[in-house]
Image 1 (cartoon, rainbow, N blue to C red):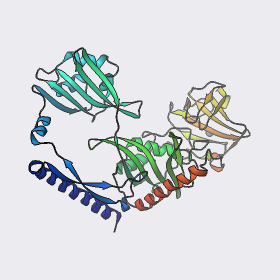
Image 2: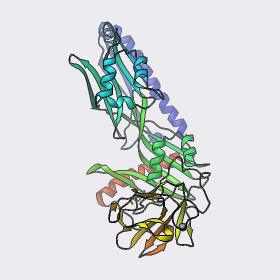
Image 3: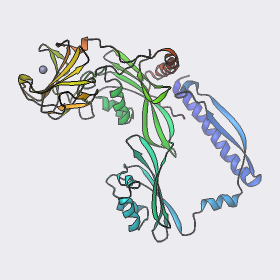
Image 4: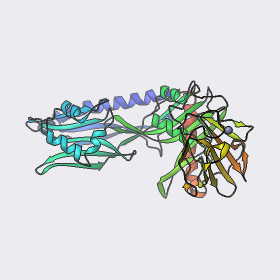
Length: 450
Ligand SMILES: [Zn+2]
């Protein structure tokens, strides 16, 4: 049986189980005061249940149901109050949003503008839901929505009218997390392919980041390259709030396959990283390209000239890019030189340990100081055309013992490899992911599971 057919069968079983439970509850709720409720329970694997092996278990449980009057009372709002729900629209402002919610309350509006906890409400993204309880005079009694703190953390924001005025609180929000799998093929650009596969941009950018030591997405992509990605999504009330972390990914670039599996270190889950299926860290000492990749710079058509990203006779790699494009240090190190260097124009040289250094030339502006420390990916300057240069581009040199070498031909030592108990644990996760990739191969499937 094909994977898709199997999935449909599983989904069908879940739906009929739920239908049965609803019917039972209605009948028994009025007649018996007790009901038999059937739940479709999906097995929970460490990362996600394997779609093909998804076990469906029916558990029958007796649950007391409150009497009808209590249920009706709980449904009707307090006299003179009503609850409204709205979504933030593109170009919305607070006044428009409050008006749609039926709020006519200048005190509430000025509280939201001035209170530090409430203010994130002003920057809500289009699509976000907001609920409000309003009295018959349009006074806001309470409001609730989700806000994003520090780019990553979701919080529940609750505003309440009390006897001493409004209070706003932000509380931790435990989102419902699911796992999705997508795959696609590159025909014109990475983003065209991820869009077609309905992969969120945030996930596409994680893919770029994960493979940034091996693939320069601006110049290495080939038509026919393929990707598979498994990632988390966070849900609230059956609606996706945002995408989360990539758990595993595979990228087939110009005939070479790169695989990545997220592995959290047991002693500190926040400090996890991506490893290949053998347990070797993907993040290496050097990035493949000093230029960041974005939707704007993506695609074959955007490449300014064909030699971009290629090793040239003059002992460097030229990256064509518009003036002002940020330049990143490709590895951790110390700034050895930052200033004007004749034909190189404005140049920065970063030293990475004893034998390696990298040089970045023709900058329009330098953003590093001699002697300063930099981390991999940190911006050290901007693309320009200073020195002997015929147009805006970055001349990049990778030097070993002061001699420029083609970085594509050098094997740089790996950063970290898992060992011992960690490696054992990783192998189990990786085997599961390898199996998943095999199932997905050639087909674009979406599986949602808790
Ligand atoms: Zn050059």
